[in-house]
Amino acid sequence: MPLVDHHCHGVVRRELDRAGFEALLGEGGAPPPGTTNFDTPLGLAIRRHCAPLLDLAPHVRPEGYLERRADLGAPEVTRRFLRAAGTRVFCVDTGHHPDELLSPVELAAAAGSTAVGREVVRLEKVAETVARAGAEGFGRRFAEQLAAVVAETGAVAVKSVAAYRGGLELTAAPPSRSAVTAGVDRWLTGASADPVLGSALVWAAVELGLPIQFHVGYGDRDLVLHRSDPSLLTAFLHAAPAEIPVLLLHCYPYHRSAAYLAGTYRNVYLDVGLALNHVGPVRARAVLAEALEAVPFGKMLYSSDAYGLPELYALGSLVFRRALAVVLGEGVAAGEWAAADADRVAAMIGAGNAERVYGLC
Ligand SMILES: [Zn+2]
Image (cartoon, rainbow, N blue to C red; front, side, top):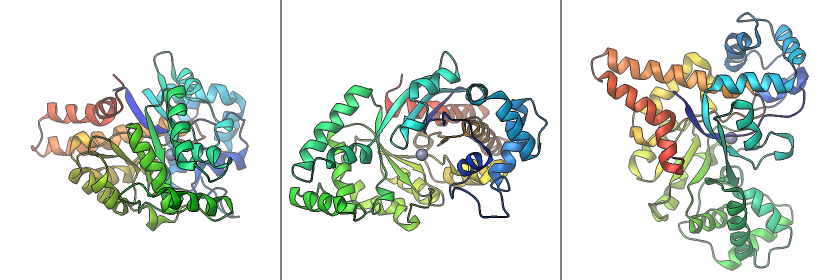
């Protein structure tokens, strides 16, 4: 089943030494002295499932794994893992360190001739450029620049990291011009961005009409976790036009809340990307099953949320496929589901829902 990965990033271009590899292996960056990020569910999964793709025995020691990786070189390692992912479309967030990472086109090229890379524009990245010219007229200039970037890149969606910039408690209406100017002024003088500014960016994106992705839950240490709870979006969701898809990314440990919102609001969708890689293949079944408890099957999407390491695209795909097969298979084994329905739901979650929401067909 070819997948649509509706949220991922690029692969790092540079060769990685052990420190560089480990920093990308955990959301907390470099591990403390005396520990290693290989001693995590993700680290063990890489030794188990990625080692054979480098012609190594499963469970090879980290030293041997990294040695083989260095011998093959970054382009070959990237090619092997991206081909193994079996992903047909990559929707790539290009807003975080784009200079260090493969572009959507390069990513797709590494994955094989039939793969496609589509761009997702990060609102805050555009806002940084626009704010450099000052706070005056920010709202209008941001809307113009966002429309221009979307047109230029052919983006399929925009993404908000409001969760990282003051939290998801967005306003139920576009903030006033004076409130936005004051918010940009505060931001330019070194204060962290606040929900007013985050709201202004998202409401400008609403005008554009594209699907809007939100970072939710699981992230790196720039995040204040409780401000990324998706239930904080409730006032915004009540007010936003119901025809604009809202996609909640990652969601763990709020995946059950996200599933509830997806069941309650007709335009809300979710994935449990990133979490599946980090909890590892054994517990991925539980996380996916919890998200699927309450979500309509037309509302769940696949993402790897791979960033930096090519291993994460292959592993994300493998862990997702296996977890989904187990969860749906249990329904069939219990006599509750017809096998044909399980197959149909798998195809919806793996690709069909994303194709429909982003208009990829
Ligand atoms: Zn991401």
